[in-house]
Amino acid sequence: MPDWYASAMTELKGGHWIVVGATGGLGTAISRLLAREGARLTLSGRNPDKLAALARELGEAVVATIAADLSVPSGPAAIASAAQSDTGVDGVLYAAGVVAFGPLGELDDDTFDEVLLLDFVAPVRLLREILPQLNAGSVVVHLSAVVAETPMKNMAVYSAAKAALSGFSTAMGAELRRHKVRVLDVRPPHTDTGLHTRPVAGQAPPLGTAHGVEAVAQRIVDAITDGEKDLPAAAFADL
Ligand SMILES: NC(=O)c1ccc[n+]([C@@H]2O[C@H](COP(=O)([O-])OP(=O)(O)OC[C@H]3O[C@@H](n4cnc5c(N)ncnc54)[C@H](OP(=O)(O)O)[C@@H]3O)[C@@H](O)[C@H]2O)c1
Image 1 (spheres, protein in one colour):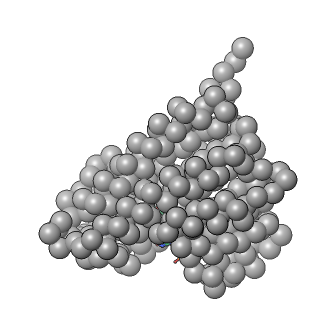
Image 2 (tube, protein in one colour):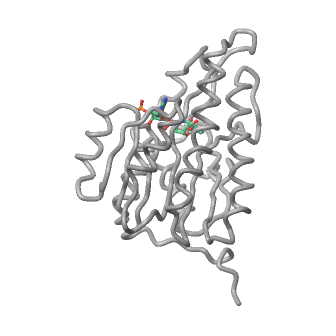
Image 3 (cartoon, protein in one colour):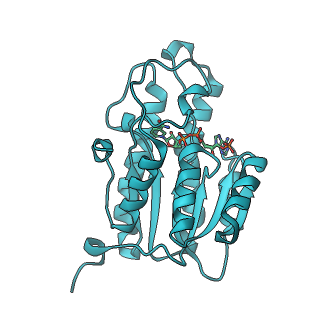
C-alpha cells in the first residue's frame, strides 16, 4: 500500500486554515495567497485594527478573526476556540514572532521571556490546543528561521528559540504522521518585512540583502501544496 506521507499533496481549495500572525509581513502575504487558492481562513493577530483591515480585504475567504496576545497561555487557547467549526481544521500556519538583538549581557528577563514565548512556547501551546480539530491530511506550518540552522552571535536567544521550534516541528512530524498530519518546518532567510526594524531589544547588525516577501510567501505555499516535508533556508536561495 502506498504510504500517505510519501505522496501527501495538499488541496487548498475549500480547506479551513488558521493563520496566526496574519497581521505580520509574511502572515499577510501568505494569507492572501491561501485566499486566492480558495482556502477558508481563520485569521489571528495581536493588533485588532490590522486584523480587521486584512479581513475586509480578503472578504468571504475569512470565516473568523481573533485578536489574541500570544505571550499568555489564554492566547493560543482563544485561537483554537475561535477556529472551532463543523469542518475541522485542514491547516495551521504559525507566522507570529519577535526578534531581539544584542550581546547576552545586555538582554533582560522580559526580553528572554518575550522571545521564548512568541518564538517557541506559543506555537507549542497552539498545536496542543488545536490537535483535536485537525483533520486527516492537514498540514501544520511553523516559520522558524535560517538562524535555527546557523545560529548567529548577538542573536543567541532568538537563534536558540528558533532551533527549539525547528526541533519541536521535526518531533511532532514523527508523532502526528500516523494521524496523517504533516508538520512543515520553514526556515526562511532574511526577508523584507521590516521585522529587524522593530526588535523587542537591541539593534540589528548588517543582515545583507533581504528576500522579497511575496516570493518567500509563494515558496512556502508551493511547499504546502506540493507535499514538501522540510523547507530549509537553502530552498529560498534561487528566489
Ligand atoms: N522577516 C524575516 O527576515 C524572517 C526571517 C526568518 C524567519 N522569520 C519569522 O517569520 C515569522 C514572521 O515574521 P515577519 O517578518 O512577518 O514579522 P512581522 O511582520 O513583524 O510579524 C510578526 C507577527 O507577530 C505578531 N506578534 C508579535 N508579538 C505578538 C504577541 N505578543 N501576540 C500575538 N501576536 C504577536 C504580530 O502581530 P501584530 O502585527 O498584530 O502586532 C505580527 O502578526 C516570525 O516568526 C519570524 O521570526 C522572519
